Length: 292
Ligand code: GDP
Ligand code: K
Ligand code: MG
Image (cartoon, rainbow, N blue to C red; front, side, top):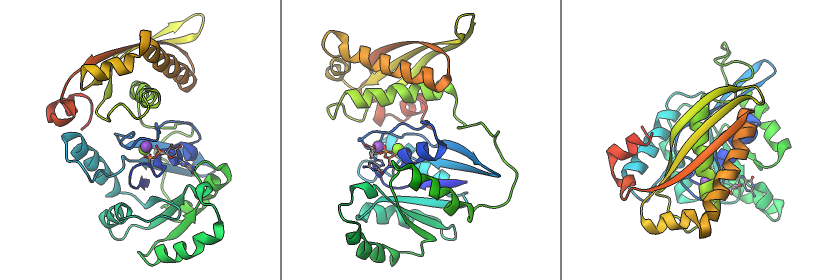
């Protein structure tokens, strides 16, 4: 198993999706987009790669939600064969150093210098690469872009060396260990983040109230989903709903389209908005919303 770790927004989920070949982990410009450990699976020839995407380490606030996120990360990096520590090419910040310091000694660490496409001149990266090489005994340092398919393909060959010979854990076609119900909630959450810009604080979440499957003569299979977006304040609710309900409609429509592709069936999706103030500070509530 390969753990993908790093501070928020360095591109961990983008990398996981690229490695798996399909979107299973939601991404956005906002920190705290990934809130659960998500396993992605890719079978390439005789080798099965199992990747664990993790929430970025939260170092600033200590809410119940953040504590639960950090626990998910720590649980992941204990028992893996190799760690991919993702940073932004040309930058190695104190937050990156902090994540590096939390890794378990003895497990090989591949340093991924991501977003290479954002580095203006490649030659300028050379001194930086030397500098980071001195920070730890990295197994490898890989400058790349998670958005470049050629770079992503190269990663398999690099990781293979660090994986033990053992029977596959998953079927050849499996992409993730997460349920469709879970992916439905994540997809709505991604659209919520995308369409609310930077206004909506990270303290909003999505709960799936209904997930019902039925056979359909016309579509083969049909899934009925009801989702509730939970926000902290009345003002946030208005923000999510938008003028004449336009924003909420758009969130629902885009989420439905994406889920139909992902699950390869017809989807009926209803999305509601509810106010529950203080949920991210309330441990019982964080648990009831699915964060262990
Ligand atoms: P995470 O928080 O580490 O999981 O980061 P995400 O995967 O959610 O990505 C954060 C942002 O970085 C998103 O806007 C991505 O589109 C962007 N991103 C990820 N990888 C790359 C890359 O290789 N190049 C560029 N330019 N942007 C990237
Ligand atoms: K993110
Ligand atoms: Mg992420």
